[in-house]
Picture 1 (tube, rainbow, N blue to C red):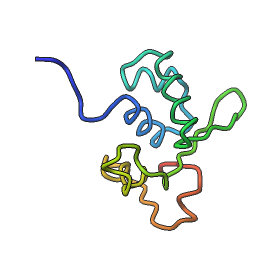
Picture 2 (picture 1 turned 90 degrees about the vertical axis):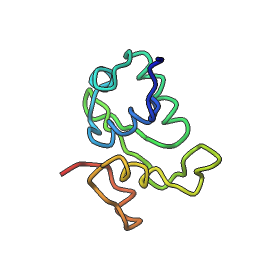
Picture 3 (picture 1 turned 120 degrees about the vertical axis):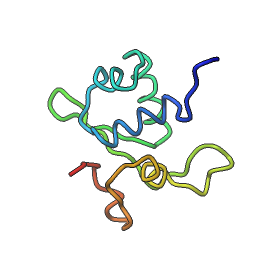
Picture 4 (picture 1 turned 120 degrees about the horizontal axis):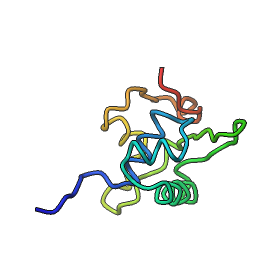
Length: 107
C-alpha cells in the first residue's frame, strides 16, 4: 500500500507556521518530515501566492498568514485559509477582520 496523507506538504508547512510563526526553515522541515530545501520552496510558493508574508526579526523570519485568502482548489474557493486552520484544530479563532490581519501568535 502506498503512503499518502490528506494534507499536502504545503498545508502542513502552513499549519506549522500558524502554530510557530517564528520558526526556522530547519525546524519546519524537521516537524513536517521534509528537506530544508523543499521547505524553503514551499515557503516561497506560499509567499508568492500571498498566503504568508515574512519579516526579518534579527537573524530569523517572523511569518504572518493571510487568513482571508481562499483555498486554491476550484471546489473550495469559498473557504478561507483561516477556516481551514480552524478545522485542523488551530486554537486561535479570528472572527473579526481586524484580528485576521494581526501576526499569528498562539497563546
